[in-house]
Length: 278
Length: 297
Image 1 (tube, rainbow over the protein chains, first blue to last red):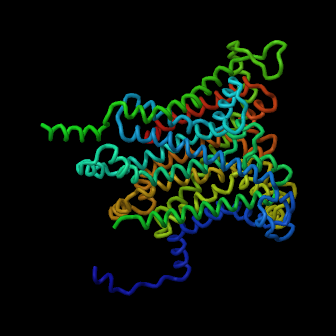
Image 2 (image 1 turned 90 degrees about the vertical axis):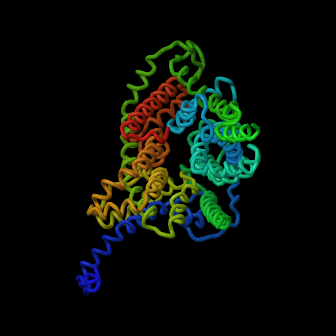
Image 3 (image 1 turned 120 degrees about the vertical axis):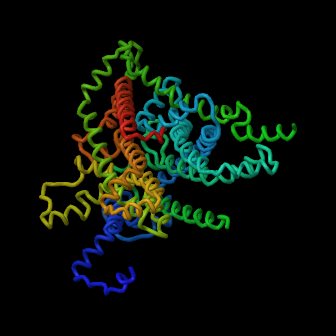
């Protein structure tokens, strides 16, 4: 072994070294291409948020920061955005509460009907959005409920619940049960154990689920289009105005959401790391 | 005695406490799902066999158990059905081919940048998917820089266009569902103990053999979850076909959308939706059985 290590390393010819470098880094080079593919449209959207294009944003007409200074310059963009945020917050709150309850029941208890509950959670995820949207709208029509704000909130809660359950359940499954046993050994009752041990441990999972629910709700188009009637949401506004050109203010909103999400995640990571014990 | 009692109550608190507790936790969510998921699907099934009321207004239907609706709806749109499943399959395979090496690089080759790169996969999500799809349309369209460049280099002909084609629709779907494919793949690749890969190398397996016999089998749950999360929404999608396609790339989603909103033919829309849902459920069930993973259900 020692002899081997001491032997002079044979120098490879340059093209062999280059091909070896490529062989070793092929997967990383590939990843760079993958990320480029993912980010081209994001970059395009960001660049065209500075376009001095007026109402239609199809051709580059010159650089301006006016769209960023006044994102409500196209008022319908901000109305739509406001609706999307309101719907998103309500849908996130309700689906997180309902989904977390189900996740605890499935993750913590053995009860009759557990596997059919699991199936009921899986089904909405295995149903295409168009079917969810169309079926809910036909139910609303039967009960003569007009599509609009609340039907949209209900629709969003419905398709977010399953994703919340799956996310929170995964977190509960990863908990060490001995922590709760220890709390009870120290004479904490069931409620105290839940409040001071279980809940704080599951909290990151719940926060992740809420973030997921909000992003699913905020970006939803198909189900919203069926159940919102004349109410405008941000994706709906983009879709409808696509034919005659989307105002650059929409690009400002899209890019801001991107940066906002990045900041939230980075800050969340930072706080999470700081709070880690050791 | 008191001690035994205390011990027992501690154990029982752990394995469930009061027997009613799980039902209390479940009830609100399950009642909600029953009302706004099961009931609508049942109502959809009901609508699907209705026929127009004689002499009634547009959009007025009565129940006549006219099961021929299904036959008619399917025969009139079998092309669109076929196209939906073909495009969804192509997009799923392409997304898997792109996402697998990407997830592999993030999970096993990125060192301390792992979390940051993972965030980058999800980040495009937050720029509305419609904005991004329309961005592709403009980048690859007549006004963008790609088409004139390729024409200048004689890579594509003067008449060839990159948008308004089946290729653009499939590429758009591949792009849109890429994060859904990457995340589960990452999750299962990240869980692999690097020592199993080392062990395989120690046993004289080369890179390809290690991948085929160790890495790939261990990442199968991710492959199954990722392909399902891509295939299901892709099969029902109509947005990519509407933005990046042409009249000859219409998918079943476009038909359902227009029978609902333009033609106001609810029974046909319902029959098509129901057929789509059942077809997907059957495919998904077979797929999960074949791949031997029931982690999802």
